[in-house]
Image (tube, rainbow, N blue to C red):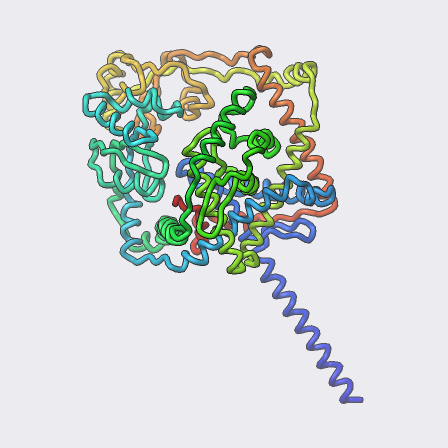
Length: 585
């Protein structure tokens, strides 16, 4: 009996220890769980996969609010994807081609990581060199064109005496760059394309470069200013070297990926057939002429809109369009593969060069995808996690599309929406501003002293060279909107007409601002913004419907978010993997 009791006691103790162990393991596993949606979880890795690839506006450091906004989008996608499962979206014929496209993209990037990431080595001297550069801020302006011949022509115009301010006016679609003479403001190591950055750091202040080629086109750069940190400490280097490591590693990985793909593809002997390309272009251009409502860039068409193009070429669908070692694609196969291709890699079907280049990319990606499958990378946990996220996003977007298509509004609906939401259809307050741009704070204070003794603002502006590229001879820069210039709007909020503000640092330069006039907001007539009202009503209705779907799904699958973990995440967290980018080759 004693022996049995002893065995029972040991059994109970073992159970207790197992329970404690499992509980501790559970707590450990929970430590990187960011979100729970019913039985589904998003880990830190799940979040960072998509978040790190989001476009960044300039070199701005992203904030907690940016992370929270992206996380809410992920959560909405998951709830919509769950709704899609309930409504059989997984069998929707629109889903499979998109899944195939993203599967290729994800496995190709996984292949790059497997083959390339471990090859990249960064030594201490590179880190220190990058860190030293990061402690120097450059301010430059540039002119940008697509071709070398255009860049050479711009360089000659600069040599003949024309200024960046004059040439930029008709060069940039971005109004800010056009009006500022291509001024890029201050930037540092890692903020710009590597080729652009390398040349910029070699320039002396005031020097203009020869044309510089980057992945985007050709630039002519003028260095306006250089700010160097007077003190660089070992402690600061050790604190920030992981940031430098990420910049250098990403650049090296892209170069290595380009080399890997070049070596991998050279033996394939890919040859694009000119006759088939010429026929595709003729068919596409004929289709554009007969369908005036279609956009110029046929790649922007949805899958269902590609069908007319396919009908145009039905009789020649077996013409060979590309040949390679061991096989070929005819036109029919080309469209099948196009249907499984990322939209960014779709060609402009009315442009010979675009088809040839994009077709070569499609063939390259098909070979790389098959190589990834041979290596079993479709079983890789990271790849599967990313594919699941993309599947959720694809289904969620299809649901959004279908919700939008279900709405039918008439003119009375639009008029009613306009009357109900009049507050959002006022013009912004406009300010008429004069400014004097100063070389330094000391210069600004000196000019303020002259203004205080009666010198006219317009006279000072006319004799200050730095003001001329952005303003008239009298310093006037015309009317500006509050929303476009929040710094100036805040500065002048309580100013009287004619009043001059103290010098303020805006865009890396000290400016003296004078308020010349103020125009109050005005209600915009419906006729002038009817298209915007229609769009606003549609978007509002779609948003309400999506929120209702999400609310219903939340009742079935409760949500919990680890906000502390989200706050702890940083865009510069040491040790995060660098996401491989598609190479240029």
